[in-house]
Image 1 (cartoon, rainbow, N blue to C red):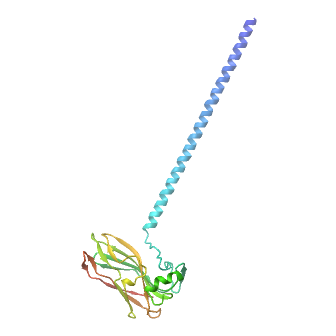
Image 2: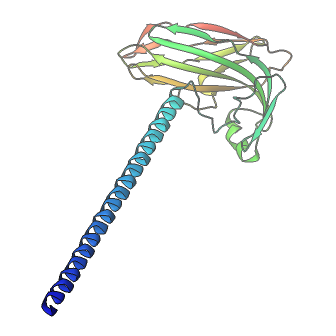
Image 3: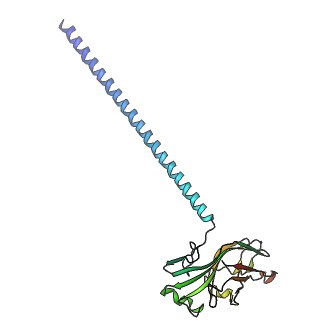
Length: 246
């Protein structure tokens, strides 16, 4: 009887150990499943973040591309930014000085000189008081370099040919009062005169100080382009166009 009793006890103990082992195994398996699920969730979240980052990057690139393809012009270091001046009498000041809009011609014009296409987007007549550090720059452009009026053109110039072409969108201009200015008087210095590579397009501004014109007397300017030259030969004579101010 004692032997049978010990056998029963032994069986019970073995059964308990086996149950505990199975329970531990199931617990370990459950823990592994939980960990695997957590890792999958984390990987999914990381992939989502990566996709979001890629989407943001794509949007940013699209925005940058869109911004660079707009009809924008670089601000000139020679004069304050006048892009927001659209009302007569409006003023703007920055580190370069102070400008005031005296007259405005917002009508767009297009002129073709052989292969050269010029778009005149606008013209402005402004009064300018340069900052003290800018005055020296204007010594060679005006007798009154600290306080003067000037006319500014905003243009796009395109060489539509497959050959290099030498061209000046403003060879010279003349006001209705008889004052004349040549391309060498342009103080914006944005290299809009010279050789244009085949298919090249340039956007920029030209500024000419007027010594004689006043707000009351400046009604219009007549602009003369240069000829279009290829291999030092004129392929098209220059043309002229008139800009009338409000």
